[in-house]
Length: 301
Image (cartoon, rainbow, N blue to C red; front, side, top):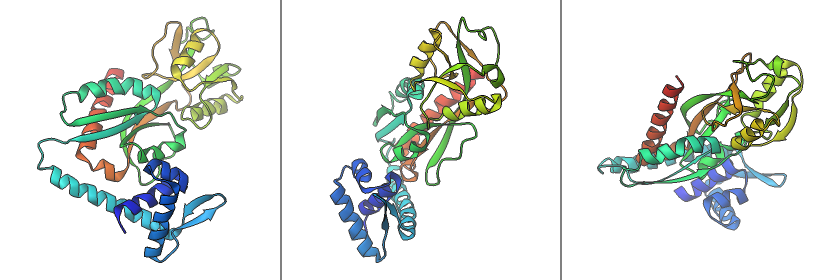
């Protein structure tokens, strides 16, 4: 048994199959299958089983994958013990964020770490469905994710660092009948044409809560995940939308109205694999993100 095969087992669990695991590990599916077979032989019990065309871990495989997390954390702590003798943390940290958070956080994050010698940031924007954020931690050291108020916790095995809570406001055009209001209720939004995100993405449950409170199914005219595009369509009078208060670029002709009567917000959090969270250089980047988040909270104050 070695770290590489244990990492392969973890990837098969998190990615749900050999092919997806091979992609994230930069291996061929054949190599992944060979490592699983060797590990199964070594353990003496089946570690995976077929489910339709997919593959899942057996109870023994799940137990070994859980233990593999502890092994990986221990190895990183051992590395950190040696790194303490360095003057400063060094290394490359890969960070992903959904687009609106990337727009808000990436420029100041780069600025905050510009003078941190030895730290290299590799940044990427990744907008995925709510359930897919944890799997990104296989590819990135830090994943900036979001989930709506009231959503279930992230799965066990993912370390979560809260950053900030962001209200979701109702965006209407300047000529809209509600544009002069200081706040709106779900009942006042019945019958409106909505511009909203695709199903499964974090803002969608808030619109569902608005519809449930109003007693009328929402009329969804357009599904747009890019808030900049949605804001432009609102400004042009082509519907209304739920947009995040801090991470939406202000556009002339759009009024942002607080929504009352339902929880209307999202929690922005950093997700990390427990082993990668032990790296000093990763912790330095997370510290910078939390400091930026605190500034956002103060500004919203």
